[in-house]
Image (cartoon, protein in one colour):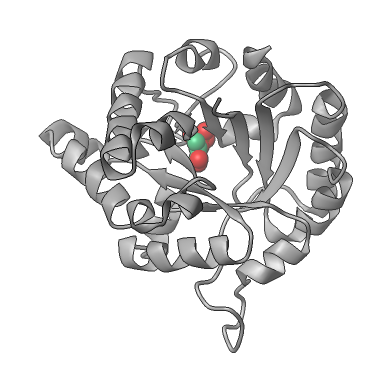
Length: 254
Ligand code: PEP
């Protein structure tokens, strides 16, 4: 049975103390309850990683991730962080392919394939994001664009490595805009992604892959989105910065 996941993406928000306090609140509220195949992942700025990974090291439900890694092992890359450095904090996930990294830092499929392998080689599980812009949706080209984003990255992985990948469908037009894909629009794309996985790997792999929805997901719309057959949870930006909202989204699965 595939995991149901609610992952928070704090982006470049919260100072050190604020992040530590927010994570403690989340952990207290979620930590000890048995939640079966449900996971909560918090992807923080690098500064929080060690502290929050240590806070949650005994939790069976709550995990910690980074929002980026560099594509090389180590060396003269001032200001960058390697996958092994992230791993050494106790973090276990990393977001890759986020539309903000694609748009503002020029990350393309070629680079993302290298980063994916770098994460997996170092024991980090990628939360790999794909999604189309508003223009791409309106032109109808988005099916091809989504397929390309998959084929040139995660579909090049071995079955064994792909089993450690969580996918996130994040329509760019819905991220941070307050515009959410309707449950039907999101389900249609999630079903398409699962079919593409089945074609590239096999049906069992497709059935075991968690596919999250991201884009202005909040306590009001999460239940309907997560009730769709192929939506296995969410990647949450803005609403993950408020403990009550994030918990309400997590509790959709209870
Ligand atoms: C995100 O950036 O991954 C995201 C989904 O953001 P928001 O929830 O704020 O739209």
